[in-house]
Length: 179
Image (cartoon, rainbow, N blue to C red; front, side):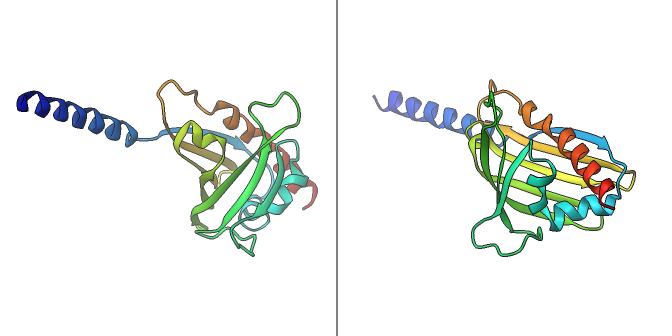
């Protein structure tokens, strides 16, 4: 009887270890890159310090954005938190999804900001979900999305990846017309 109990315990530990190991798998990385014609500095500045303009600039995608958890400044610094409502993947019309995120990293020299999702429907599908914006000196905007699926059968977040070119284009047009 002791032998049977020991084997059952070992089997349970092995299954648990497999589950833990699969959740620590390396994230999937997808990149969306588009050219822009406006000033790269102005584009980066809008996302770094003036994100409150996004609903008026590209309201078809970004419906609202607000400060969260006691933040008083729109400047993206490490640890700052915001809530954003964007076009929903499940929408047939104009419904929006709300997400809360934290700024995980800011590199002004390379014009890069990394956002980590804290709350929202995507966290039902993914263990982690981060988005990095980088405005390159070559007049391109690169969005890198990294995520770890909770279940291998979950879909990739292609709907959200397809929103980035629209955001880039509308911000580019806005900044060129307001220079």
